[in-house]
Image (cartoon, rainbow, N blue to C red):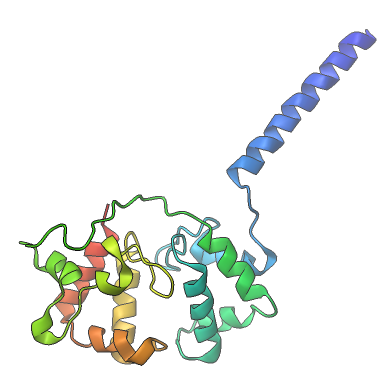
Length: 208
């Protein structure tokens, strides 16, 4: 009888241990305390919840940290994010930036190296990869990298929500978003037509 009880106990312990291991594998890094407030809009994996919050997965730690600082300083204005950013004190920004920058986007995008294709029949693709120098518009990939995968202070555009990309381009045009070096993004955004803003937002959002 004792042998059966001990065997049963071992079996239960083994199952329980496996269950805990499965949970740990599914969510190996818990959301840090400072990041709990971010999950409501951006998701625990940084996948974004449209229209509440954009995708953070795939953005660099440097970029996320800088934008949170911009919200705190009022350089970048948003009625929701400004007070949220102010809750991140001490090492809060570092915690949040480290956590979300470690998350990988769910959609894989094959990088298209600039120069691999020299002619484009699609006007939006041409704008993204070659720009329009007759209007002083550089290619988007000049700063945002191959296929808009981003890096450093330049955010990933590939797979980001189209509505968010559009909102940000309009914010640059309106002057409610600043903080870019030498006003570069404001200069670019203000040269885009409304149709081009829509087209670029949808182009990058649907890249695969």
